[in-house]
Amino acid sequence: MKKQNWDASAYAKYSKGQEKWARELIAKLALKGDESILDLGCGDGKITAILAEQTEGEVVGVDKSSDMIALARDTYADIAFEKMDATQLSFEARFDLIFSNAVLHWVSDHRSVVAGLKRALKPGGKILLQFGGYGNAAEILKVMEEHIEAHYADYFKAFMFPYSFPHSDIYRRLLEEQGFEEISARLIPKDMVHDSVDAFTGWLRTTWFPYTDALPEEMRENFIEGFVTRYLQKHPLDENGGVHVDMVRLEVAAKNPFCFK
Image (cartoon, rainbow, N blue to C red):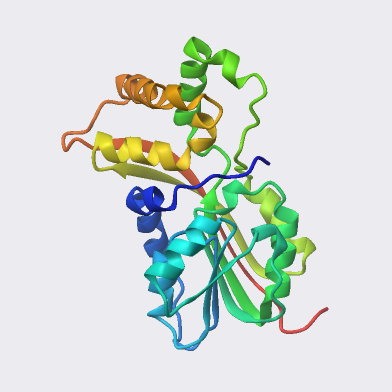
């Protein structure tokens, strides 16, 4: 998969949708207050900080982006952050909980991710993950394809789709292969609401950058502006000036057994 060039500061500004989902996911954790927690794909660190407020145990955030880790360390100096790829987790029986939100759709090798999760958990430890699942952002992708075919096809001849939106059945099998118990994997439709056209545009720039990266730099803003116009023609603003995007999240929960069978 092509190297991901994150703009950490812009992501921090335009990731309110992801933050909202993370807070909803955290509410499901029912923490006791002494858990050791790994935030997998911590980004700018703001969700890691929320997790750290809810436990006296060790909290570590990891992300493969050097820029994200640098921003997280600068913003939350009292929390441990490490640069690490989700497919190459190096922890051994260290965490009671592994949490991940809006990250793993950037990964193609999910088998390696799941194996690393298993290694990193203490016996009896749990995972709670949510990311783009089968059918995610279907209308965004449809409009993107139309926009490219109409104006930019020559620049996308070698383009490789940068995301992985797996089905729940696939993840359930991967977890079973690694010996996880109490497995839950389900697809959840979500209405992502951007407060304004500016917020929607910022989200496109920061989350869908593999598409703009395929273009010469001088064409990127026109590409984004044209896409926004095309999308809003099909999906007009709501009465509050918000932009709606239909998303599908894959939510995964499982437990590492106390002993091997």
